[in-house]
Image (cartoon, rainbow, N blue to C red; front, side, top):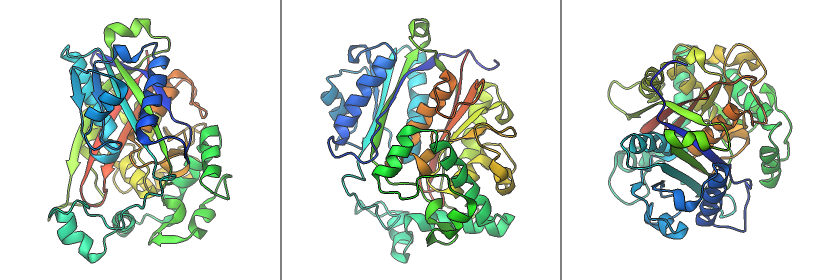
Length: 397
């Protein structure tokens, strides 16, 4: 394997299994997940010296989680950029470990929008009462969340001829992968999805229109969920009970509207090349692509911008089941079922890392034979306006 010598690896993972939970709040989910992920790594809370928290479960990010877990970390990271927060945390943990500031980093996540009956904000503003470009310019004119992504889809269709049928291929692929994942299948049932079987392109197109051209099955689920990831220093890797998933390269970029900004180009167009260059690999080397799928258009744009195909060719690239785990011709896409068919509590970036590690360990329910390299790319906030892209390249020995 080429690239720089790995300095850190993901040693432990855990995914909270319930998608419609009524027993535990977000902090409890984070705590349970932390203990289980540390057990997976052969470690305990006493070993943790770096803590990363996106603030989804407490008023004071990081601090309240440290108190709840009884931790006294040397490093505390509290970035909140939505769905890409955990990819940025992985990069931050690598830097802290390389600098000798930490040996064991813990990333936790927990949210309960489903059982808590949290209403997704209808407008794409900040909702915090402070002037912003979103609140002052977009929200007053009715820019809701799904409309933001629908604008990208409509523009992509206008510029490149991308069709609703091609977008639907992404939902079809991820549902096929969800069929092999017992947690995803139970979750679909628990949140009241009546058709939990495989879906077709026709099923997607016949589902209710939400914001033209996006149908209901082009949109992610709303579920409870959580999990944890443990990242350790290189010198601890030899003692791991399971094979390490080395963090080979990371990249981050921001994107926001401007007079010359193309809304069909995401921050991944800059974060991806950074991560691949630092890892010493190319998109053609990747076996598994865990790519954010808040909506089908999100995934299509990110696949283009990460370099799996040229800009404008995403529609034809995803056709014909090309990205299924057992098909040649492309990396396996979102093999746990993704946000479209497995879980989406609000910030899905952590689950991208978890499933990438499962694949590299040979533990996935839709296992890619001989998987050696995976990419996890999170997209946080709003694709069609302001967002942050975080890319992480993972590999096994």
